[in-house]
Amino acid sequence: MQKKHSHIKFDFFYIEDVIYCEAYGKNTVICIKNKSSIILQNEINHFEKTLKEFGFYRLHKSYLINLNYIEKIIKKDKNYLVVAGNHHLVLSQAKKEFQEFFDKKINADAPFIF
Image (cartoon, rainbow, N blue to C red; front, side):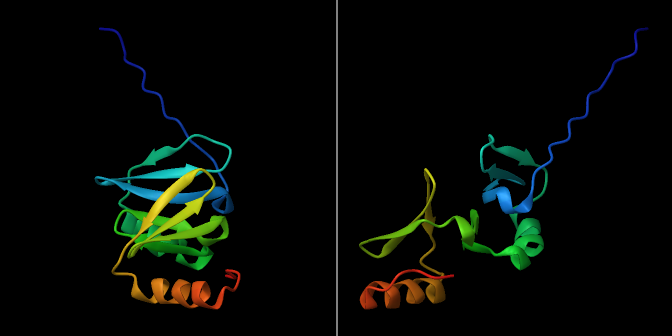
């Protein structure tokens, strides 16, 4: 009987290079600057707890974003679209405090500062 070989792959990246995380069933897709995305076998709740202290914010039940990568916020009707590079993520309407923050900035015509 021939022995099967299994391969283990490790992906290394810096937390500050993570643009956002996206829920993908019980897994999470990590979108990394200058790299393709990788899928990790943890739910997004795990990353929300782990990355909060590094400036990540839960925009939506499916998205966790690194606030340092937000380039602009687009308000369309009652929804916000958060732009980070060529990625467009929807801000949940349930995130009232975040929406109110941006409403004040939009009404004041002031720049966004985090």
